[in-house]
Length: 238
Image (cartoon, rainbow, N blue to C red; front, side):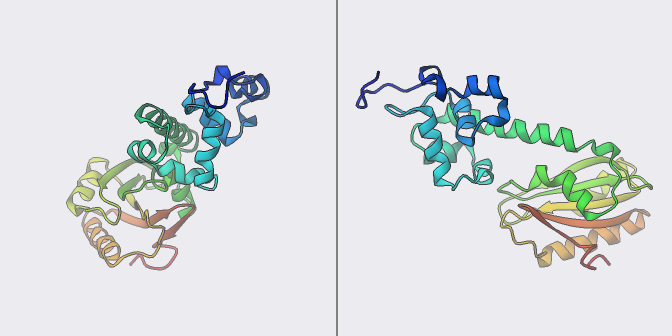
């Protein structure tokens, strides 16, 4: 047994058998693991004198066990904020979160076969791309005449409060993809779903430009965490 004042860094393999998340996952399935146990698997080892499970529990306690907060953190934020989480552990965590996002997109987004019937369909397709970002991105969904998504393009990436969108680039993308219709999508990291004056003005510019090309703009969706705003649903698409 290790002395409480020792300076070892307990790894998963050093834990008591009942505390080993890897063995628990193999026996009961990965869904049986707690959030702290999943984090422990990512980190592999803890602090000096503190098990990786205890360290993971303390990290989760600082965010009230809200994984969405953890999902937004950068490598630098993680390695700076938490003792024992250096760049290597932080990178592993961010990589595992990103892999989860990509797997979720693959499961949800047979995007090129999806028929858009409502704003909720757009939200379901795009939420994993946008809702946890700490900066703004502007995307276009390209649709066929039957409102089936044929492709998606990220047109612009910006800062925490805005992103610059060139209407010419939007139209170039639409023409290159031979789009019959477009749906505009961007996120508000602040969580405020109210369209800004710039959002409204940009929407109108794109609608007017698209008309000259006989391309319909069906909606502009603003995505936040767990919620969205639809210009079409709110009667602001004109």
